[in-house]
Length: 406
Image (cartoon, rainbow, N blue to C red; front, top):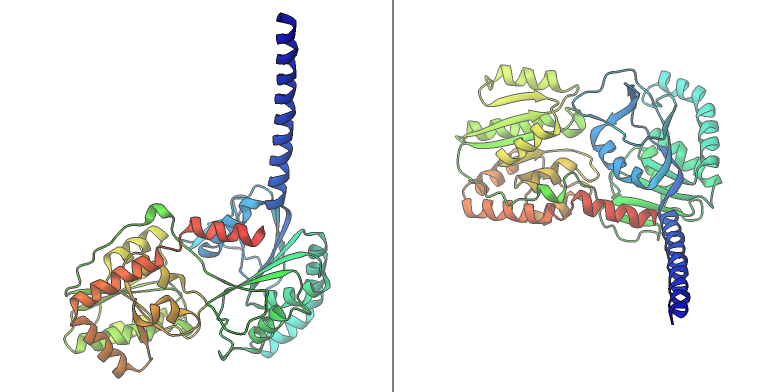
């Protein structure tokens, strides 16, 4: 009896060891299916090295930090700048990461075109070499480096690939030829094989490799119900690059016209760019120093607090993909006033979560003033904006990235 018990126990023990080995092998196999050994990123975003870490534009890095969780090694092909990180910079976290420098490419002037023609062959050769060594190719578009990547990837039909098209995917949008070329190459399933193209918005008549996507800024822990008090004095803000394409001057002039018609409203401007001097001049000439403040670039925490304390966001941009500042403002109950470019109309619930600007001062001022008369309506829009935006958390974003890589 005693000997039988020991023999039985020995069999059970062996079965246990065997089961552990099977589980270990299964776990390893499961891990392999979601882990990419060599991940290649091709981007036009400028990178800079500081204290042995690589930095780039914070919203881009914040997204890539989710992708890099499922990657063993990363190679980045991108332009490199020699500058100290700013308030809107962030570093990669991956331990095994290298950057291969390529010159920034511009086609705006004759000298730029000539310079580009000289450096393109070397850039294409580097892209070809790195793509050949990669297990997964990830293109960041639109951009001139991304355009070259779109061309070179054609020669690697069996490689797994993804492309993040962060611009306006609207087929009817008026765009530079280089943008249209990238959209054509990416959606051409004869030339572009084994690739998922992530685009903003849900557009009709797309090829099977086009995947409607989104982006995110905040975790589930940030979700809160913000019951704003919509009463004068109102607070509006502009967040983004002070560039002509984002029309910060229109936002400033819109708020000024409301002030001239007796509306108590202020404007806080967050961002930097070549339009700063234009804005400063307008503020000085119209004595708006008490109600308009240019804060420059600020940390994400500072901007987050501004969203919480403000009533409205104004973004009269002429071109966007998925404007993160609109989603971020909605997340904390700000009512956006934005132009109907790309998928912005969808983001605003076709007017349920915000106002679609027409870029006509008279019409936009009248629409804005009519809304200010309806306190209940503003609160409803604010709560609806929160409910919509808070679905798109970083956790949900990461799960969708895993599916794309899967």
